[in-house]
Every structure is written in structure tokens, then in C-alpha cells.
Amino acid sequence: MTTIARAVVAASMTFALVACSAEEPVGPPPAVTVPEGLTATTVRPLDGTGDFPFDQERQVQAPAGWQVTVWARVPSARLLAWTPDGTLLVSRPKEGDIVELTPARGDARPAERTLISGLNQPHGLAFAGDTLYVAESDQVDSFTYRSGQLSGKRVVADGLPDEKSAELRGAYAHALKSVAVGQDGAVYFSIGSTGNVSAEDRDADPERASILRVPPGGGEPAVYARGVRNGTGLALDPDGAVWTAVNHRDNIAYPFDRDYDGDGSVDRNDVMMPYVNDHPLEQLARVQEGDDLGWPYCNPDPDVQPGEKDSPLDYANRPYVRDQQMNADGSKLDCAALKPVEQGMGAHSAPLGLSFVAAPGIGGTYGPGALVGIHGSWNRKPPRPPEVSFFAWRDGTLGPQQTLLSGFQLADGSRWGRPVMAVQGPDRALYVSDDYAGAIYRVTMG
Image (cartoon, rainbow, N blue to C red; front, side):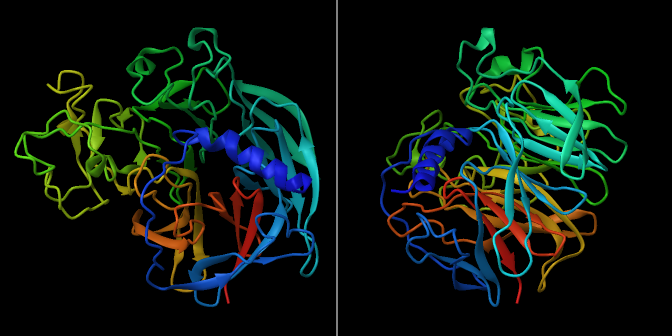
């Protein structure tokens, strides 16, 4: 195995924890289906990018006429941001650095260099003019970026919790942070929960499982939205509102006085895989100051007919139901008082990077909208596959999920890739990071 192959494998093992767990389940193999409107497309490695897993032919499903190339090999590639002068930045929490990729002329690999190293699990990246914001696991920084050089480091927010925090004793499942910058210069960043149902996060200082806001010009961070279990996806829509894509909780108990599994007994408070498979949905929510996304007391429910085993599933404008294990009597939080979730996706999708594409948007009939990197499930049987999703931006909100790229998961449930984030480049192509394959894909529309 080559050096890059070993690095890719090591990175994929380390960062499987980011979404939910390090273990992939062994279950019945899922059927591989081609989403409507997509066609099989061979992934084409550029010269020098053909190491494992691209030492054999790989195919994805993409819209007809789209081409997918392995543009660069960046082990541990996570979140992405384009610089003002047209280079692509890639965060690498495992390596503690940010890689800069400069597009080359013609059909060639980009030039690659390390922009900055020695950081503490850098993850989120965001630009406001020539100011680059970087979310480390324990603080948020800003730098002046000019002509490929960083200067003037300033700490925007510090003392953030990570696995080194004394009170957590190394037990922190969601240490990686994301960052976005408002039109007024306010800085927003996410703090993930300590664990699956760690309710004490809501009383921590700073509050975990939240999105915090630093006022324009600086100041103390304040909670902007709470009950956000792990809002790794964080971005502003074309109107300037803040959206987050949330990794919601695992292994919820059935919350209704009904016989769900057909054995003749009431199943309230039972944890059953057929129910866990599709509950709760993963939120794609527009958040305003003071919003609560419910975790761990309320779960957004995709069931059109709540509690029925064969209920149709819907992910738009969904209400919340009480978490049976954490809020059975409703005394912790009034779930009916929470505003419905604008959009969502299947349970355990593990959405990570979130970006918006403004008008005219991406090619074909898609137009403007949101791009979400779907990492795929760990605790669903069969596993939910990774993909790149698109949500159309129409009349000031997002439409339902559409699959842009899939095929990273094989019929036996194994995977050769796991997308993290997709962004549109200055050339209007899409660029997709994949931390499992250690790759950056360039996707062009025919």
C-alpha cells in the first residue's frame, strides 16, 4: 500500500467518530438504487491521483452529462472555502493544518501547499472580504489573507470545550467546530454536544450543543440557538439568515402507547431498530436568536401518521415529539411550542458541510440552493449511504432534498468514499471533499 493510501485509511478510521461512532454496523446488505434523474458515471483520476481507492474503476451516480474527476488527493480533507484570489482551502483537523490548492491550467492537478500548520483541530473556514475565520476545537481565530499569506492572527472566541477540557476528562464526541460570518460582520460558530444525550451540555459555560454569536467588531460570545446536538453544517443563505445541518441523536425509544412491532404489547420506551432506522430526522434548520432545536428533550418527527409503523415520511415543516427517555412528561421542554423544522433528511444521514450557491446557481435545472455533504450512517441497518445533496432555494426558503452524487456505498454496505462538503468554484464547477478517500473531486456539468 502506498504512503497516501495508508494516510487515507488512517484518516478515515480516526474521523469516523465525528458524525456518531467509529464502528460501521454489520447488517443485511442494502440494495443499491440509482436515484431518479441520475446515471452511472465513471470517476476519472487525474495524473498522479490514482492511488487507492482509485486504483480500480469507481463509479458514482450523477446527472446525465456531468463529469467527476479526482482533482487532488488530500488525506483527512474536511471543510472547504474559496479565497478571494481563487484558491481552495481545505481544513484538516487530524493534521492540524489548512491546505491551499491553486488551480492549474488545463486538465492538471492543482498546486498544493500548506497554508498554516500547528493548529488545534482546525475545521470550519469562512471568509469576510480578506479576513479568514478558522474554527479550532478550542477557539475561533481570524487572519488577514493576502496573496496566499496569513497575518494578524486574532482570537475571536477562546476557552471553547474540546477533549482537553478538564471538566470533560477526555470524553467529548463532537469537538470539531464550524464557523460562518454574517452580513453585518457577526461571527457564528457551533459547539457540539458532549455525547448522544448529555443534557448537562445545556447548562455548561460556554453552553454546548449550541450555536454562539460574537457581535460585529468583537465581544463576548452569546448563545444564538440551543438544543443543536451537532450543527456541523453552518452557513448563511442568500438573504443572510443562518442555517445549520444537524447530526441528531441515536437510539431513541419509541414514544407512543402503541404496538409498533406487532407482538401484541405496547412498545412505549422500547428501543427498536425498525423505529431507530428512521427517527429522528436530521434537521436542516434556519435559526434565529433564541431558537431551540429541541435536543435532547424533543425530536423532530418525519412520520406523517405519528407512531404508525408504515407511515409515509416527510421532511418539510416537521413538528417535534417528546423524547421518551429524556422528557416523557414534557416537563423539561414543551415540544409543541417549538417551531417546525424547515427541512430535513433521513435519520442518521450525518450531514456535515453546508454551503449555499447563489443565483444563477448550478447547472441544468437546479439553479440556486444549498449543498450538503452527507457522510452516511453508522447505526442504521442497512446503512444510509453517503451522498452530496442539493436543496433548491426558492421564494426565500429551501425545497426538499435532491441527490446530486451517490454511489460511494457498494451493495454489501461497504464504502470507498464519504463526502464531507461541496462548494461551487469560481469556474462554476463543484468541488467536493471526501475524508474517507482522501480526495477532492471536481464536478463539471456537460
